[in-house]
Length: 79
Image 1 (cartoon, rainbow, N blue to C red):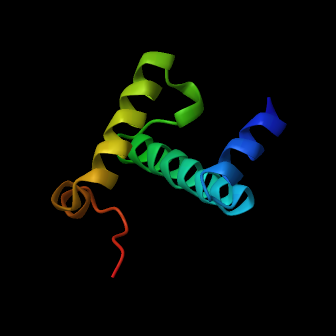
Image 2: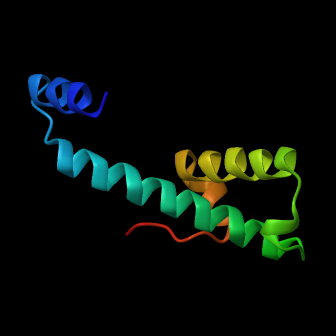
């Protein structure tokens, strides 16, 4: 499966290493955002039920897609 993904990315003229690094960075940024939102609500992320974790994921994803929401949330914005 991994080789197929690499070959597909090459076919699409996408550098597979760079694509993987970007995907990992995006996941880490979102996960840290989830942890931050949990702390803001006074809870430990590890203690949250799965449904709340998923809600935090959605909120973090929305904050990335909506610059106004990101500013209101206090997340880091790119210059």
